[in-house]
Image 1: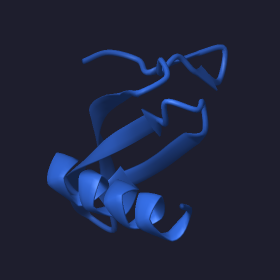
Image 2: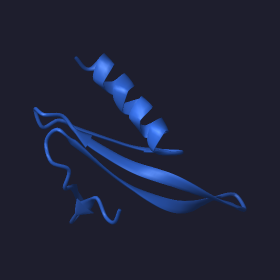
Image 3: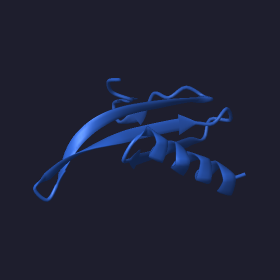
Image 4: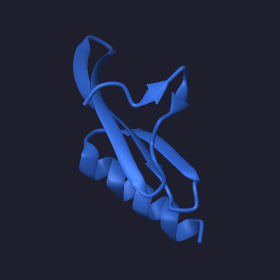
Length: 68
């Protein structure tokens, strides 16, 4: 996937998820990460960075459980 935002704002549609991968350095080591956006059907946005897509979805599920 490419960019998930336009002019700094998420382009995630209601009821869907968008994500993209990127590489960054932690000390001398290069690591891959996932930037993840999820917008509820009501329009509330959840955004995070995780180790992989499963990590991001776990964070999303926890957020959904605690924000009902």
